Image (cartoon, rainbow, N blue to C red; front, top):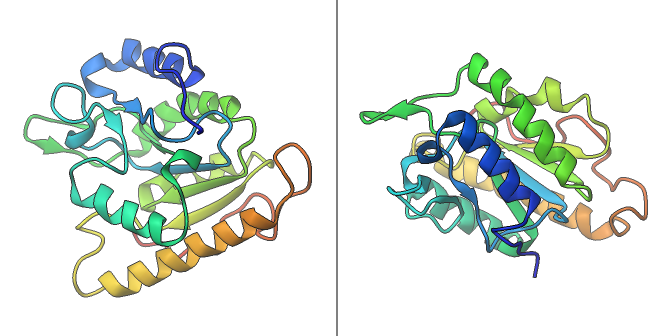
Amino acid sequence: MLGYSMTSSSFQRLVSRIRRDKGAEHVPDFDPDGGSEASRFLFLLEAPGPKSLPGKGSGRISIDNKDGTAKRFKEQLSSCGFKKSEIVVWNIVPWYLGDHKGIASASARDIKEAVSYLDELLSIMIDLEYVILVGQKARDSLVYLSSHDRFTIVGLHHPSNQSFRIDRRQQFTDENIAVLKRIKNAAQQTAPPNGGPAGPLGNSGVSGGPPSVS
């Protein structure tokens, strides 16, 4: 299992640093049942939702959270053969944006501020091969991520209810599943981590992603 210790992992040290900077109540944990520092897949969404916040929700970023986004995302991942234990799910901006009235959208300033935390996460995940940017706001980090050449960057539609509105739900579902299957198939053909070249998806740069719609 690719789980990790909540008390000693590099992930938890990163969370602790963000909490010192942003306040513990605004920063969820990684999912302890999700992937570890050795995972090959990192899925980056926009920012934590209220269902993930400590004291108000699960306290973790998880595809098992009780909201429509997590449920839809879990269904799409599972249908393409991804196991929860092999993926890391996180956010470009890892702290809650908004107030008691509701969540706010990530600004360019928020994303720029979050880059140092993302850089630390990338350095922790030494076997990382695929970074999947989920939604338009996550894809705003593409230029920064493209400066790295050790992983493939791919785009997905954000699985929120707003993005998956009824008139485009089937289209977005089909597009996400097609991309996820392509990633999974490519990953199965690559050499073991640290032991071979990049897989069929190539190196850095968004590859095989859906249109740039959040």
